[in-house]
Image (cartoon, rainbow, N blue to C red):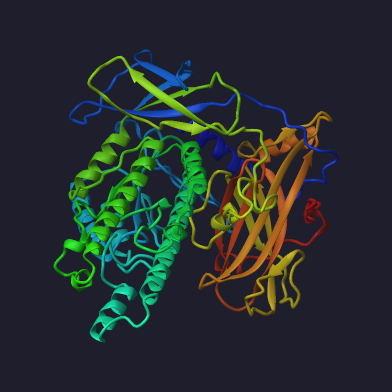
Length: 620
């Protein structure tokens, strides 16, 4: 039996597009008056295990006590989930030629397992060990347990969609190339490969240091470069997890993200081995907060697994040079302290992300197979509790959640709280505020659409959408379609072929508010990007829209979806793809899909008769 979410979505798909006569968003007549449509509902998944880490079954709602900020909360709904309650992966709906959707079939009724292979933060030798351990896991894993696999370099890549076929999962890992991360080449605390060390050795052999400021200056430069690389790693990693959370948001129930990584620093601490220790200080706390919010809303529990296993300081390795310590006996102790500080910080970040999301971190464990088995087992049997907070002061502060059980001798794993953001407050986006409110000198926030619209990225499903893409011109054109903007760094030239895109977005995923005048309003952004076969961005069509719907049209779009028509020009020669996206600017929810132009360029052009006149354009 389909879940309510899946059933509504399939009904939505059955009613929308192609519909050229649907009314598009119209210019707003008045400012939007926000009305609270309901109460905030908090979902808490709880994993309960005994001393041997075996799941405890058949508990009832009355066995649990739920508190927020130390105050008891009433449990509104309660459900037990097991591995046996998961349903098979439903088939992908069959669409006519030219019709596409970001709907992604996934198991329902139980937890969904997603494996993230992080080569950005993992040294090469540990990647090799990870591949070997994963093959062993597939030989011993329970048949029929579906899993999806993603890879992380400087961007997120889908390696295998949800499947229970071990051969497909094995092939996905085998096809993941083992190579050096562009931002990490060794484990923390190593003392080789440093330019300052090579300079020290050279000047010592030359009879002494000619300029006492040379080595400290080089050390300062190297420390700042390392800090910059750490910040980039944190940014790329958080961007990738944000993408995953937005993609998994459209899948009902709990999602277990099993994250294989070698390290992940959230903060860069002062470096006491250089002349200006605070030049390296950096924090990704704001981005981390956004990530945990997305994980919370998508019901994702993170299980980080440190693939480095049990570690010792690399300075003790016989392969490391010890010459640098001969003339600086304090250097060895400083490197040892630095290694332990960095490792502790990395472990703390992994543990924090696991605790904040209701998962568990596996650190200093060489048996990766056992870690995966425990993560899958723990995340497959859980209880879902929901409540409406008695505290309705949405001030953005962190609310601590406590779950207690009358039974003793058990372990509970659940997310420890959430940020009480006002559900009706305006969302700060790149369109409204370029910098963070808390700092005039801070870097701009990452535009979520920039990540969602990357070629080949997972298709975010916070907003389910469907698009019809057909050729709109029968002859080559030398001019771009209306509102198209070429990438100034691209040298692409015409002739072009124009394509018509008719979008229908699921209104249940979009913030539509009723104003005192009886009309309904939404604040949206529609985008289409054209990429070449190498992933270079060539052309963009982007429209922010303040839409107004009469009560009659509102009732229609509840059945057919929110419509939008746009046209995009694609170079006539070459291989290209379209990335089509919808952004709810009121909630920051996103939906996107990708269309290979080869799949539509041979289709009959869209009719040009008056009956198929595009809907009236929305205001920008």
